[in-house]
Length: 235
Image (cartoon, rainbow, N blue to C red; front, side, top):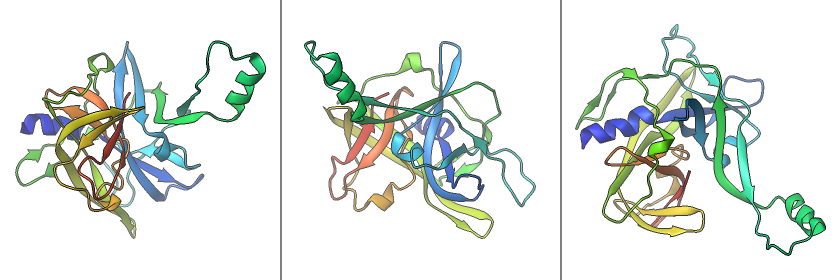
């Protein structure tokens, strides 16, 4: 099981948001990179990447003790959907499109230039993740959740700048169990009732895996004071 939880860690990427033109972090999220038919794609959720802020990922590459490298992610796409019947005429369709439709909490960008993404050492006390390489799930191995399996994900919470240093806490949320499908989202049951959104702040966009190591979705919302409180965007 610890091997699977290591997959949660190694597949997750810390997302750093800055004001346009600045390299000072002002917000945070999570994401991952997946492989599909020989191409690489960055995945996260749109409420993280559509704030009018510049989006970077943290590669955990060696630094000079004063600054840490971050990698910009550009040309991020998000999606909306429209409900239309076959009798809808062209004018009505244009009106529906101009209304913006209903946004899907999902964003994607193709990674066209390769770069190194490393995993830093993390001590969870019950087990350790050694430094090495990040891993990239195959989208062809995407799975759907079921009621028999358990699930989990990783990210950083309580992220904040202390001078020039970024402070944060590594957090694994597991085991989770699948509850039901609701529209565009899978709903999962947390191990214990969620007291506040702050328990999950910064984890939006984290890839969620089953304990067979297969990706099932991205964390996108929580509902405090409920056990059935984790909404997951299906990819």
